[in-house]
Image 1 (cartoon, rainbow, N blue to C red):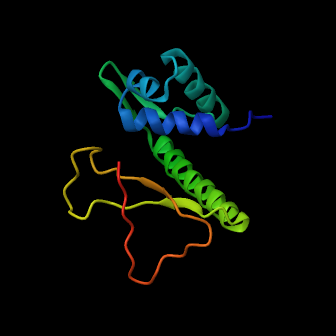
Image 2 (cartoon, helix red, strand yellow):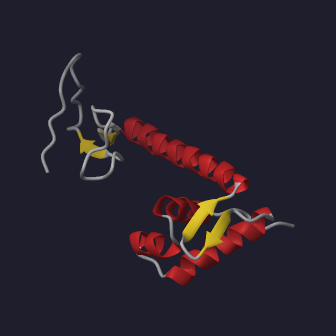
Length: 136
């Protein structure tokens, strides 16, 4: 019997590939490098194939790694949607708004990975053509 895949393992794999190194991914995840390495090794054992090409300069995903990463991102998106659905059912008026930069070039603050979360007061619906103003 194979070990079940864990959501945390998938998140760690995505973080490592996006960061380019286990060290940088561990730092961004606020975990030790050894725990991220162990998590990915367990994931590789569970699926029975290497997911990363490891070099002294970093890591890149194998073909199997790219396939798992695509699925992991889809799973994360579905989980966000499920959370939004539950929030809507409960009438909490909260949810996630994602907006890419308007220009094709990447923004300076986050290299084009903009993501904004906003809360709306209960019972407030956006008007057609309305605007959302956010302050930091």
